[in-house]
Length: 146
Image 1 (tube, one colour):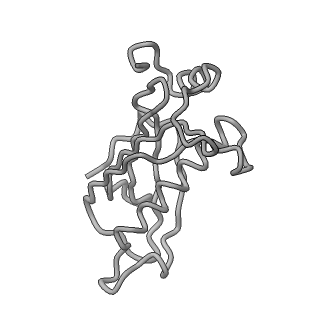
Image 2 (spheres, one colour):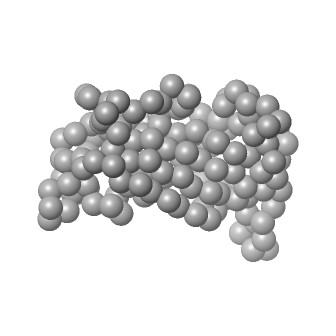
């Protein structure tokens, strides 16, 4: 099965390592969270040039992963990432993880994040400048912005 990733403008390539695998010889389900995290880091680096993690003002609220086929050590995968919905303080990332050599769909995931004030422990509204950058990168208008 070839994964349809044309709507995704960003991706990260990952070489599956021995430490990513479990006793069954395939990537452990918990490792996928690290793959998604790496894609989010690269997204923010591209969008805002963020390299200082003390400037990150959001938290992960929800993660959902559907595993479609196993990945083994030595496979090279590509993690596609996009914002599919943009709220006032939160947004949804969609992910598709595919094997590079074949395009085989490995997993689909979705995460919800919200902007967060760590000092005061409360949710914040997203800056309009950041919302605009996301909308411009993703190529969507008001219909995707809540």
